[in-house]
Image: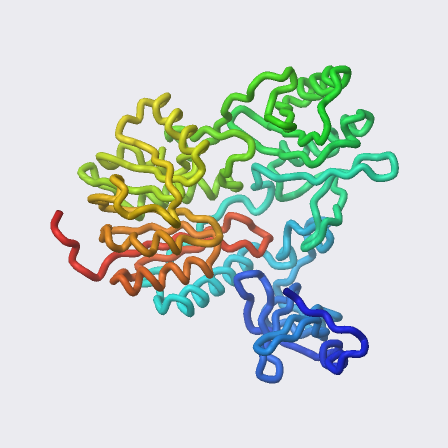
Length: 447
């Protein structure tokens, strides 16, 4: 937690001191990293090589944080942010850098952190997986606030509950961005606008979907207006109260999203996790198949599989593929989808992957493993994964620090990092995702 000091503190002068810094790199959180008096200083808003007058706002024993007061020298590639809300909306942090420069700096931060934490350097760097620079997000949550007789829709500022009003967003998929202003205009005159918690927007294979989170039940006399809006704008409107329903009160049936031409589409319901960036996700699925190279006589595990984003694409490439997920509702949804598609060589299991008994039946005779954990990584899995001695382990990471920590365990178990690549899932933000392939130095025991 940040510590703030009163005006009477003996450290006030030190904390408020203005210094000139010239950072040398970006860290994995998109902050510029500089050195000052033997200490690392993190400065949001700067690029490597830029010079700026900054003010220290937090001072710890080993590091400090600072805010920019005035840039003195700009990076030659610095550009003006494209979005008028940049700097107030908390969604993007790096719009002042071209996307190619963003990717270069992210890849550098990824490699340095993984090597530092694991002791492993990749034997091969893969080209970054990229998609469109703009209008790439196919899901987002709009905050809602009733303010002085009007409805405000927008995104929250960084580390704040303050809402930045917006009527369009350049990183949202265009059909979703185009819905924001009409939604605000349609909902503002209705009583429900005073009891609206938020709006979830998503783009499915079935089209645009908007889920209204209502803090009070919808009045029957307001349903026709919502139905007219949905028909006119070609959007599916759903209501989230005590349960998720359609406008007429019916149970919501699963939606779908694509993972690549000719591949089966996973099913999901609003509230389920699925990857934000369609193009990059399709690239990840293709790269996973390429790197794992599953063989017809092999058995594979897809850990933290969600609704089957990778599992469905891998089905049929090996004699058996087992998806394992900790959320029972998603496991059941994935099972139902596999049955609908007739994927008999695919099965799903529910398990707490950071606490599961390693004697589970599905933990036997595994040739390859794919894992896609949340930001915390997979420390529980690392405790037993290497005992299976799989020939390939593909780690899809949304946090380089947890990847580095887990990679250290794999290194201790005899695995080497054969490939590492940046996955630019969130252009213009500090979020840094990656794919890493681990292969053994040991000779696999005969089965």
